[in-house]
Length: 112
Length: 116
Figure 1 (cartoon, rainbow over the protein chains, first blue to last red):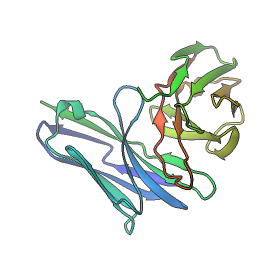
Figure 2: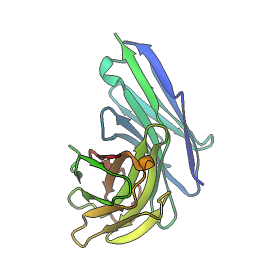
Figure 3: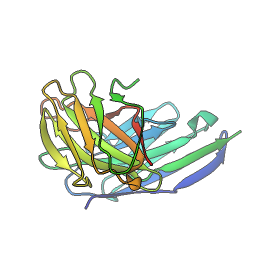
Figure 4: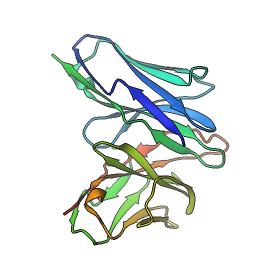
């Protein structure tokens, strides 16, 4: 059974801090790793990492995929209160189909 | 706005009843996923459809079923409802263009189901 584990489960930081969120996976037929941000309801897409694109950056957020270690990190620099959310890691896998398996998420709280 | 529409937003029903949740994917997306999110379980994959055909099945109970119609909208049917079925149900859609099957999924706002 495919498994995605995120750590830590929750994190409280002050504005301006840098945080690193972790994601490790055990899946059959790995295809991609995705990061989502969930604030109130729907998860919103942040990044997708694949064998051909193991590093992504957007503003203060960046992510790296380590295929050897079967893991990924999501870095957020100069955190702001608006970064408070649950960050979800998902792994895309499958041979004939494409499934997304999600981790339980890391709840990030940024306090002023 | 992701472009994925789910209705209804909220649903309160009694145990033993049956409900239908509806999802309209983003324009052009052929693939639809259903997920259940409860407080302690995170996002649990239920089922995936691609262009009307079931593609993958996750931890979906036998009391639950889904289908995708020719116009690509999808419905998730939940029957013989139990208290433990109370959760947020998400639909997501993705495009699968050509041979590049690595695509992100875009989520609807979810249907909050409360079984009383």
